[in-house]
Structures are given as structure tokens and as C-alpha cells.
Image (tube, rainbow, N blue to C red; front, side, top):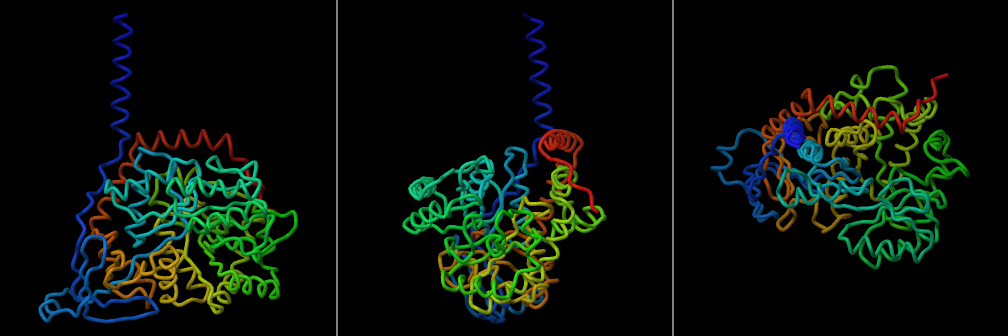
Length: 477
């Protein structure tokens, strides 16, 4: 028995040492709320631009905006521009807890100026709570989190954390349960029936929640049963064809079909979150270059993502090429929707293939510019446009009483998106962070993930899991 005790003690000690080796670094300390941003050019994109202003933050709100004093102007170090924080309307947090990945994702978001996110569904049911609550309770820095919680889908749902419903009554009951659990929105998914979706929509309206997600295959965009359509689903509808093969039909969508979509979006007040960056990243898999040559920001996350989770093309090569071929048609539709007054949001689908938190949002902004929008229009979509949808009405604004989510740049990113790299300070929920401090924490976090023990174990385990669930893609013709 004594020998067994020694063995157990040795195993416990080895386990404790291993745990310490994979334990992430302590998160960056969360500062107290409150700040004074002196002598800035205050920019509300597409609304106002006022130089020489001082913005005072008390608690989690903007308390005062006033002209900068002569002393503040004299002591202010060069040009500075204050803008509302960016809002990513489609993210997912990593499901594994306790290994520092949630804190790392949240840090990357802040470092790129994303101060509010909408979590568009918790795949395993283990990701949203730790992210939302850990940030809100001040355990680690991160953006405000609005969350949809579980997916709502038809029978045989794809994701583990799904509420399966077949009727309007079941759909309404699922909404009530999700609302009672404290979530902010309802995530509808592919295999819902129209009857079930109508029950979901009615109950969500009664409970004051928006319905976002995928237009189900049983419906079409023009049915108007979603408040915010993700990925432009439902625009292309071909009987019997599902994702990803539906992408092959995007380039051939007729102008009359787009007429129908635009009219329906206006009639039903339907917003769209196209997640252009997701399609852009998938399309790059058709090229022969290594992943990090076209997505160098993949180096900002642990190696298990870039070399295993994201290493293989997820679909056949003809489908991968189709994602890129449909860009011009999607861009044309977005311009038409904007001209008609339809709400357009920026979202990234973080956790999708090679969509890195924060930097993926910058990529989304640049893709909007490629689609024909000016930097200032893109900033308007990404701040007060999204903020007014999430509520309250002054979210994403810079005015007294508004939520204190503010970015300070040393160059104006509404004139040139190249200035996105000139971010000097982030105020999230009233808490001020210097980007230099955020970068130092990022370096510590990356050193941990690149360490021999964490890197080796995480890659080995992930490779074992993926080898059992992922099939080899078809080779190019």
C-alpha cells in the first residue's frame, strides 16, 4: 500500500507540474472605469466631425463633451482622433476553457478596436458564458458581449448545443427558455420549418429579442422571418442544393432576383450581416500558397488552428473557387441594399476558417472598401449602425450618456483604413487601455501558446481529434 501511495503521490506531482506548464499567463489587469480624452477630433462616422474636443468618461458612460481648454490644446501630443468602438456582429468564442484561449480571443478583439461583439451561437454550450461573464465581471479585458446562446434548429441539428423544434409551438417554447436564460438574441438555423420559424419569430417579438441566423432551406430571403440574415443566406435558392455547393450559383444570380431581395429587405426591415471575410478566406484555399502567406494574422493564434483546424481545405476545390467568384455579385447586392436604406452590419464569423479575432474584422472592413464603400461608410456600419440595432439607440455614438466605448487614433481611419494600425488607446465599457499594454500582454500570451509543452500537447490532441472527423478533400481537376 505504501508503494501505491508513493506512485499516486508521484502522479499527482507530475500532473501538478504539467498543469503549471500549460497554465496561461495571468490576464492583463482590468483598470478602473473613468478617463479624460483631451483635445481630440471627435468623429461620429457619417454624422459629425468636431476638432479640439475633450471627452470625459465617468463609470461606463460618456459624462461630458466640451471644447478643449487652451491648456489642453497646448499640452496635447499631436493629432488625435476619437471614434466609437467597433462592433463585430458575428463571432464565436473557443469552446475549451481554462487554457487561456478565451482571454486571448478577447484580447485580440480589444487590440484591434472591437469593443462590442454579438456571439452568434455557442456551438458546444461551453464558450459564451465564460467569455461574457469573465469580461463583465472584470476578470480579464475584452469587449461587451451580446449573446444568442444555443442554436434553434430542426430535428437532427448539426451542432451539439441546439434546441430542436418542429412546430410553431415548440419554436415559441424554445425562445421562451432561451430568453429566461438571459440571452440577447435567437440564432435560427438551416433545417427549421417555416411553421417553426414563424413560432420563433412571434415569441421573440413578444420577448423583445431579435432573430438572427441562416435563412432555412425551407424558406427564402423574401419570407422576412429573420431580423438579421447572416452570410446573405436565402438570396440564392436552388431546390435540393445546400451549402457549400450553393456557392457555385452566386455568380449567376439575376438582377430580377436581386430586385426581389432588396424589396423584401425594405418591406420587412431585414438587416444583413454578409461576413465577407469568411468567403474571402475560404476562397484562398484554392490557391497553392501556404496559409500564412495569404493570412499572416494566423500567427496571432495557437499553432493548433493554423496547422490542423484550418490546415485542410474544408470542401472540394471547385467549391472553394466559387466562394471567390461570387464576390462581385455579393458586393453589387450590398451596394443596392445600402442605396435602398437597408441596415448592413459587419461581422466576421470568428472561429470559421482562418478568421482571426480582431484582425479578421479589419479584413472585413477592407473587403467592404473593395466592395465599393468608403472608409467612413464602413465605419458608420460598424459603429452606430450596429449599435442602434443592439440597443440602446446611442450605442456606437459619442455623446453624453452613451456607453463609453471609444477609440483614440493618431491618424484618421475614416479617411484611410491604413490608419487602423494607428490605434493608441481603447476605452471599453469605460475602462481605458493603452494599446502598448495590450500588445505586451499579447506577446506574453503568444509565448505561452508557443511554449514546448502547450504547443506539443495541444497540437497532438487536436490532430488526433481531427483525424477522426475530417475527410480528405477532393483534389483539383
